[in-house]
Length: 227
Image 1 (cartoon, helix red, strand yellow):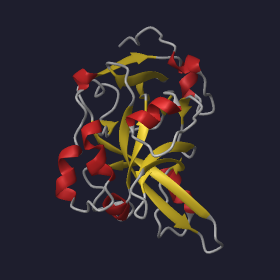
Image 2: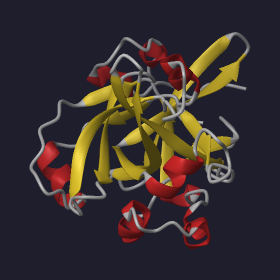
Image 3: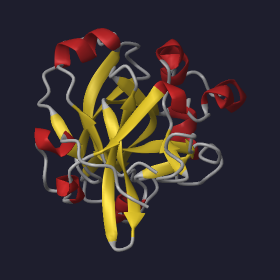
Image 4: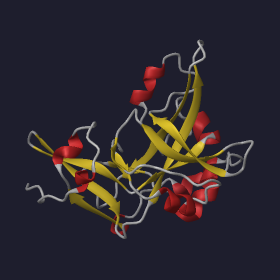
């Protein structure tokens, strides 16, 4: 799964990598948690340019009667999202990219939960594959939200968790974001674990365990957890 991640790349670099139509300004985030607002790259049906918007992390399906369902839908399995009622419309029409510099996963040893940072081996910015939704209450409240897709784990992360976030490669950004691409068979090759040998991980400060803590020392390396 993916329950926390970071985004600290400057907005100018982010705009360049994702070919955004507008410059963006973002504060670095070192411990982004569910239900918070996250930076998302998407294309609108009436505007073919890529834009960065802030959406609530935890997808609220357009048909939901209660917005609280979003806290339970922070992730969606890539293998089944096209068929699941909560995600299938978004998978067909509303795919997005969620920029990240890395994510956290935890190793349990007894009662202790040791966080690990996982990112690209070269340290570069990348993007999770995501889905987004537009929800309105009968009273007129509007929520735009998103979820992060996950796949089976790779050989690097599997000792920590059996799922990892889906990583979309830059060469596939255009296909993934295309709102007119409704053929799930064309997208299926993208729904695979990212190679473990292209990523790296290391244990970090237990400050990460507090969802309200967000500072650069979240990435402070610590000694490896013993067996």
